[in-house]
Length: 106
Image 1 (tube, rainbow, N blue to C red):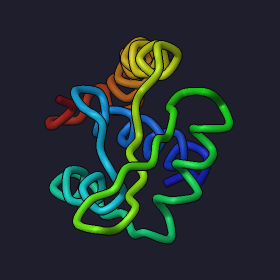
Image 2: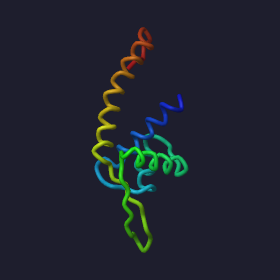
Image 3: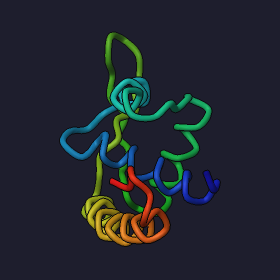
Image 4: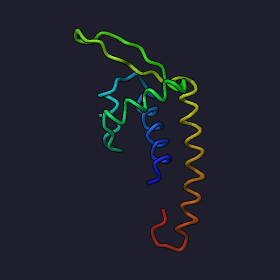
């Protein structure tokens, strides 16, 4: 898969993982794992990039005597998810065109 496309997909996956409630790194990895494999060394640069783009915010809170960073999706982050859904429709249309005539072009 094209690295830029994969990067964009992972960004949206991370945003989707915190869409319903704030979360922290390890939990985000667990939530995404059934859909895509992501490591800590991949996740944390994504989180920093999303924070820089103001698609999420970060707060620190104590948990079991240790500080933990919690990530919260912003209005812009929610908008990015909606943009992705629209983009995906176009990608699926292109896929159907490329695979037309093939039996399994769901």
